[in-house]
Image (cartoon, rainbow, N blue to C red; front, side, top):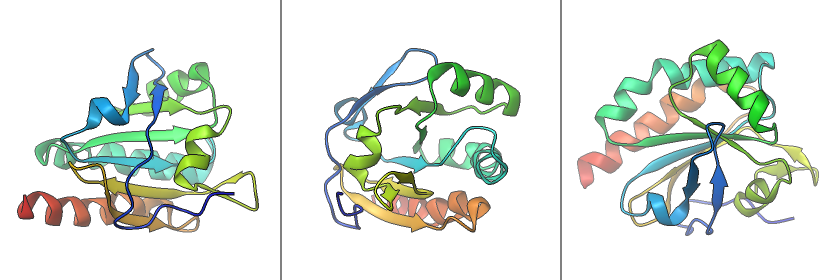
Length: 154
């Protein structure tokens, strides 16, 4: 099992599609900051709270020019329904085989998805990490704190 990425680590190369079929990759995001938040499952109570908190913070992320990507092991159909039901304005990436989770170290106990968020800077390095399974609604604010510092410094 890979260790979780930490502040200063380079984000591993990735190439994953979202529920609309658009492909997102580390290369396509190069040169701009972004947040990747890993969550266990669409429509579970904590994940709804987390995703809706990111939705409610969306305008500030947009104003800071920070992209937001949600990732779970659910498939495209589940993501599409979740995004529509909860009015989520950001991309949800399907990772059914867990490769992206593994690359970021977003598993615990071998194969259980962690609730962890990563802020990545324009150079592709991790600028902030927030890992809390018990505080799903706190992930967006933790990432906004980092994004504000990052964009003010840049």
